[in-house]
Each structure stands twice: as C-alpha cells, then as structure tokens.
Image (cartoon, rainbow, N blue to C red):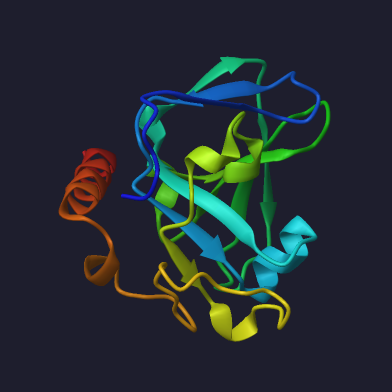
Length: 164
C-alpha cells in the first residue's frame, strides 16, 4: 500500500494547538479531484489518508466539528482546530465516524502518504498532470478492485465494531 511505512505518523494544525498521530498505516490514500474538494480546500484537489478512528490519537489540544454540505446531500463532518480553523480530518456519511479522512497536508511528513489512487479525475483541473504509475478513475471506484486485501479486512472490522 503506497509509501506508508512509519508506524506512527504525527500531524498538527497550522498553529500547533491541535496535534494527532496515526498509529498505523492508512487503509488507502485518495487524491480527490472533485469540485467539492476543490472548493473545500481552495486547491485543485484534496489528499486524504483513510484510517480507522481507533488508529488516530489526538495527542494535544482538541478539535471542534462542523457539518458542511456535500454532493451526496448527507453532509460532511469536519474536525478542525478551534484556534486556527484548519481541518485535520473529516467523516463522510457513507463511511460513518469509524473511518477518518485525514488531510495528508496536516501530517508532519506529508510525503509519507503518497496517493494510492486518483478519483473524480473527470473534474480535475486541466493543468494537473496525473502520474502514470497510480490508478485514476473519472469518478469513484469499487474498493475491492483497488484496495489490498488487508485494508478491506481492516475496513470490514471497523464497520463491524460500529454495528455492535
């Protein structure tokens, strides 16, 4: 799975008041080119490391949550530093609160989480060049077609734990 080698990946907001660490490798890393991510991030795309909630530890400070509209109409929950407002991670309704979509740019070493897949490339900015060695999809994809078996098993376990 990509270049996610460190056992612990620390991260923080812009002001440093809210700090966290990933205690294991991400399930997968998305580079999303949808227009919603472009608007929410003020950039051409968003890079999100998906990880189970129990593998993310808040190590300093706190986060506040904000619900923003989403393409699905179900809203998206953003976890932000209350001091500087930087989004550290979010939750999509389809994935629930058992999986965090961590903003890779908030990691101390964002290069540790190279994208495993580019999604919604049909709306990517025309000046963005996609790497030839990373799968790309015009929309979303079927996880079982892209995710490693270990990540699929971890996701199933996280979903199961939320049902109990």
